[in-house]
Amino acid sequence: MPNLTTNPTISYSGAWLPPGGTPTLFIVIALASVFLEHRSRVLPIVHRSKSRHLFILYMVSLFLGLSAAFNAMSSLAAMRGNGVLHSKPTLSVVTTGGCFDTCRNPIYSSLCFLYLSVSLCWNSRVLLGSSMCIFIYLQVLVIPAEENFLSQHYAEEFAEYVLAVPYRWCWMPLLC
Image (cartoon, rainbow, N blue to C red; front, side):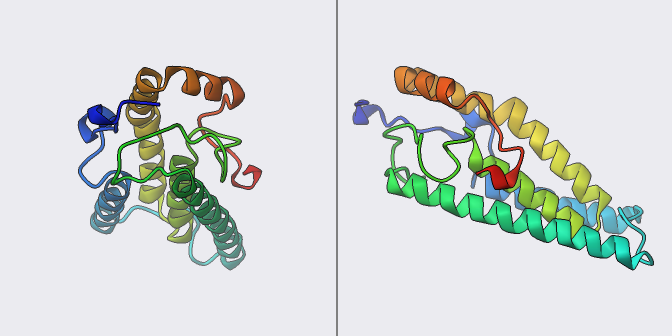
């Protein structure tokens, strides 16, 4: 059991996240992308006159968005069930429930799939590029900082979890 007087929790500076965390990052990037797309008049992913292609694009977007939202909600419920809340010190590594059985970062995976879904629904190349940039940002800066924190504070428990679940990301939203 960790020492609660040290208040082990991930700081924003250690995880390279802005104040407000990942939702703030996603909202700011989405607003900047919409502004950029409006100012630069970038071509859409699918031309508006191809209604069949637009229908397929919207169905893929709906499928990705609904499965990602379901995965995020079930993972958040698993976190709350294990006593992990953002307003309290981290007490343990969440290893079961939701999508934590199949990947180590189901919330980030779901948010990336939701962002991809929105970019497809809006038929926006700028948002699609932004979703790739956010994925790379999370993969290179945020997740390694969080894994470093977990390996320092919960070395044994996190090492077992990494061996049991080797995947950082949920590549197929329905696999969870």
